[in-house]
Image (tube, rainbow, N blue to C red; front, side):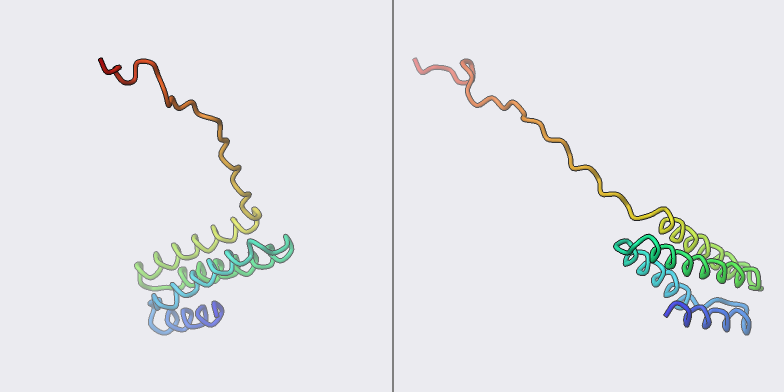
Length: 120
């Protein structure tokens, strides 16, 4: 799906100089979803997904350089940076689970001599 959206973006930039925000958002959403799914894959498979996302980043940067409108170029550069960050996280490996919090018994007084006055 991301490849189709990249083609759509390329067509919009080449013909009108502007990026289609819907297609741009779809590319990034697809890359994020692929990264989320890759977390449970083997190292080799994660590397393949990272490579594909990095290719998307390269394509977005190329489109940014071809864009004639500054706002479009900026949006494409930002998207390329985000895709590159996603690829970098994938190459770094899956996140390690956080260590469970260390629990220690806590003293809670239930009875004290001076807690309540004696009736009298």
